[in-house]
Structure formats: structure tokens, C-alpha cells
Image 1 (tube, one colour):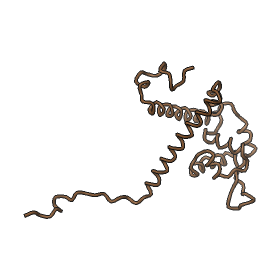
Image 2: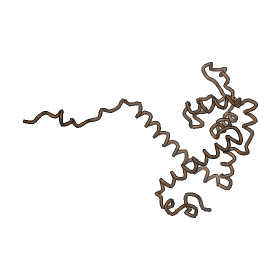
Image 3: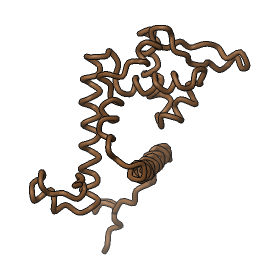
Image 4: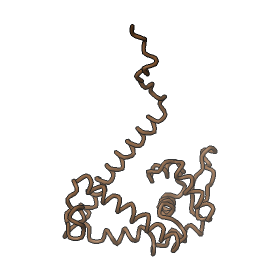
Length: 186
């Protein structure tokens, strides 16, 4: 069976000649585009985006999860998750409840409407992914998860390094003195 990484049947010769790293990036961009497109279609069909659906599913699997734990599970920055959760709460799919063990913390639960939305599979991103994974061996899935996990980890580390560098005070740049500032030679 040919895969997107080892076939040139459906890509122009120039794309097939790309170095391995660029071929990976090409596929990752295609995957990101496919997820975005499917998410937009799902918004019209189901009423929620792909990221909202993923959050809804995880909250359904782990009732009482905190927003912080959900952010870790989803590999999202808490500020990104805040917007996702606000939309789910405003659509009455999720509710925030004070944690009885810690008043500073809120936990997330699905509302009855959220439970119905969570049960729906047709027209969702995960249904499309499920169809795509049909016939893929568990071994290949495991390798794919490992590779994608490593890529995500490295990209996250690189982004964190950029954020840290952005917070450092600017370095003084060495400038050549202008001719007018040079001592006058006699």
C-alpha cells in the first residue's frame, strides 16, 4: 500500500523531489489545513468547532476535570482554552462548578445538552479521523503517535524558547560610530 510519504503518483515531480524534512512539513501543513477545513464544516453541521469538540469529548470522558488539567491534556495554552470553554459555556454545553475540595478551583461538566452533543459522532472531525485510520495497523498508529508527539514536543519547546527570549531585555547593539563622532585626525 502506498502512503503519502512514499508515493509520487499524485504529486508533481517537483514536490516529490523535496528533501525529507520539507516533505514532512508539506504533509503536516496538509493535515493542518484538512483539520481546519473539516472543523469549519463541522461548525456549520454540528454547531461547534474541532477544538471545541475535542474539549467536549475530554470533559465527557473525565467529568470534573479542571480547566488547567484540560489544557494539559489538549496541549493548549490556558489562554487559548479559555476562549474554547467560554464558547462551550455560552452554548450551554459545559458548566463550571466550584470544586468542593478547593474553592479557588472550578471543575467542568457536560450539561444535558452537552451530553447529547458529546454522543453525536456523525459529521465530526473524529469521525473523519476514524475513517482515515481504518485499516491502519496498531503498530503504525503507535509509530505515528510517537513521531507526531515528538514533533509537537519540539515545536512547543521552540515556541517556549521564543517566548522566553521575547521577555529578555534587549541586547545593546554595537554601532559603528558615525564619521562625525570619530576623533578628528590632524
